[in-house]
Image (cartoon, rainbow, N blue to C red; front, top):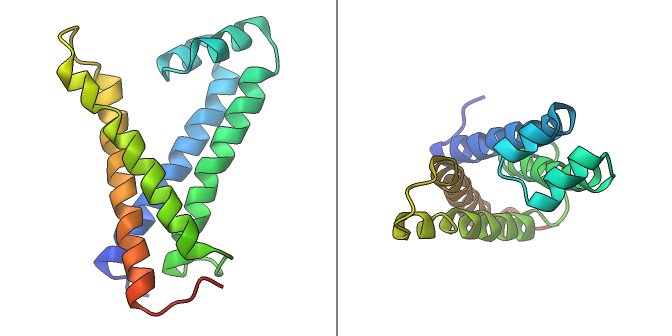
Length: 147
């Protein structure tokens, strides 16, 4: 099966979201140092250190949302069956990812030095957001419905 460039971009976004989901789940097993490396909020790191449920439950929720992004991306290009509310989800995911990507801009404005992790993560999520925008455009122009 041959895919358009737009579809390939959306597939790449789905793969990135899936890999991110797996990375988040691995943090549960890696412990507090993995959460700290991933720049998790201090509450999550503390929860992991104390063995409370906030870290694992919060991480599973975030990982599930990222995996849902993969499902919507793959559904949009036809790798899996069509899911309900596809266009709405693509738009929402695109907006959230682009906003997340733009959160890295302050890193360039502070004189405290560059946070390479923030720059990489922001750039990747901005790219994923653009891929979802492209996927949404392809959904709209191909006449595929949101049902």
